[in-house]
Image: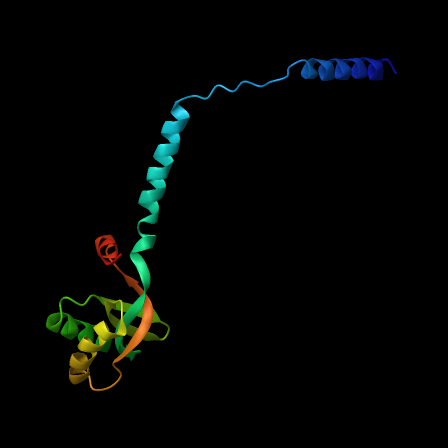
Length: 141
C-alpha cells in the first residue's frame, strides 16, 4: 500500500511539472540540412538506372533450343549490324535472340525488312523493356 502511495505521488508530481512549461523550443543542428541534401543526391544517383529503362520494341531473330545455332546467328547479326545491341535470353528450354532498342515500331520496321532477308523465318517485332541513355531521354523531352 505504501508503495502504491509513493508511486501516485511521484506520478502526480510529474504531471504538474509537465504542465508548467507552455512552449517547446527546438534547436536544429545545421548538419541536418547537409544530410538531407546528401540523401537527395544519393537517391538521384541510385534511381538513375531505373529511368534508363522504358517500354519499347525489339526484334526477335531466333527462338531455338540449340544454343550453338543461336550463338552463330548472334555473331552473324553482330557482324552485319554492329549498331544493334543483341540480347540473348534463356527461357528453359529455349534461347531467344532479340536485337535493338526501338522506341516505336516504325524504327524497328526498317531493320525488320533487312533482317527478314537474312533470316526468312521467325523474325518479328516484340514489345519489351528497352534501354535508353539518359541523354536521349532529355533530348526527346
